[in-house]
Image (cartoon, rainbow, N blue to C red; front, side):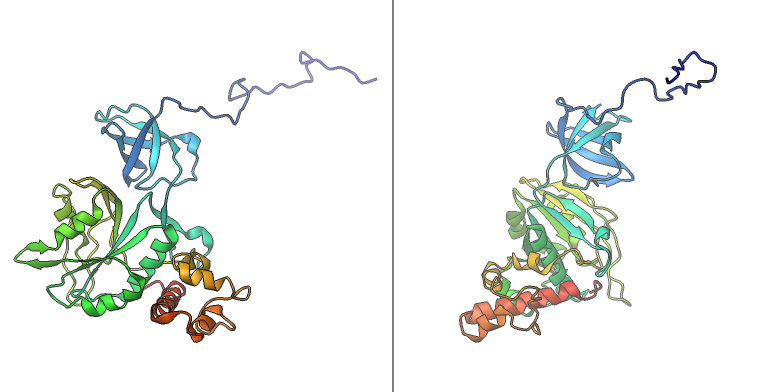
Length: 341
């Protein structure tokens, strides 16, 4: 018969519970009284927020959210604590609301899937800013941004600056088959022409501006939001590249409604996280034909028995379809090529 040794027996050592006697639970508070807010900027673990009632607040991520689940500009969040916006106060972000779109980039193509990085959340359109001269336009970079926009479910828009230095027609011809909307600006004696069309396109939407350093992105933002005060820089005469003037993404409210998110100038845009099938979804006419491709088809020009080639050869595509196939394969090549443009 087993001997019952009680806790008062000298031979029994009872360890105290250093964390108290409350039982552990995975149940988290619902925070029904949390206030909705928009993330405007991120700086070293502090989040610049704008609550739904228009109060600017500084917040930090609550411990219960853990280390995962990165919070980015454009996120809709729920906050508790001090939401008065008074100096030296902090609110706590307790929940990130479901995202409608996510713009991602990878460190470099070919890297592991885990290195992808979310840049912006909940944006409607990606405005790809490129200069027509000084610095020279880089179509491969534009192609990669188009791929990222299609993958994110965002509408891409081309914004060509410095049209006073070069004719935009040759560059626009590269994207004619894609029917990507284009905005063109120029400068004359410090005045930016074409700004009204840009304002109309951005009004009432959440737009992300992305482009190489030196293309005039920050200049454009300052013209759209006079109080923005984004730093601008010149193009290096030796390298032909611009200097990085924006160090982090920031959301700015447009005077006529809507938001513009200015991002740091980029020199590479890795797309290793994008699958060919995801890119095809941006081409509904090609996607329907590709359903007849053999399993595992890469849809590249050298892919055997690709239904897209048969479609063109049979004369079913027409001039527009053939041009769109060429554009799709160019973007596909940009996705699998080197990240540097």
